Length: 287
Image: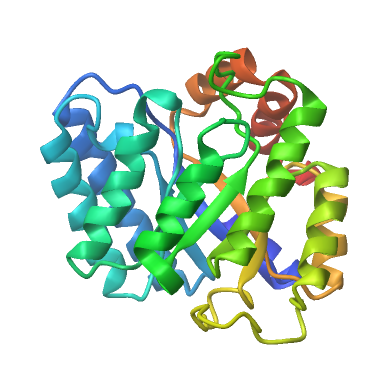
């Protein structure tokens, strides 16, 4: 928390906190993550941080007992809503893509609209998912678009760099076109350049309100229809450049005791990003 306070004061960025953990084997572990996240919410409020939280539905029991997972997530959203705090459902591998989206739909149906989802641009299904989310939620849609760290099979996902970047560009274009709030999550310079161009073409930027008809006008905790998101410890120079230009930049902060297990899994999936994750824990001065 002290790192976020210092970084926020120094640079003006905001944060989303992810308590590390997934692949749980019991609902007792799910209850543990619920309790830890409730403490994180309280600490964010107590310390006055410009931060929200990101959660992995499997850490709340999604692959063990879906009803229990829904109840856990609902309880956390209710607690966050009392403090006008947003909750992002991280997207995990393709086994839970649809169920994660369905959780967002169910929460919005019962009036808990302080929740959005992450989509992985590399998946072939993502453009259809964007259309479905935006059609169902309208101006309340809130999508974080990333390339996707999971190495999905070639029959359901793009696997080559250029194809993934093209898929990202198409996904971003569709999100902006459909009036959704968009969290642009990337560390790739060509993708950032393309994103800035698309924002300009949509007359969106840090010095203007969101001009898209039908888009929800967001509060102080969000940008004017969009924000950039970057992992703590990755591309600090790019983060600072975007902040200097006036863009809202949210730093994704992995937090908790299971950083080693998390880093090992990410090492298998994406060696470059895994190194940055480990470095942010072991060498905090490099952030």
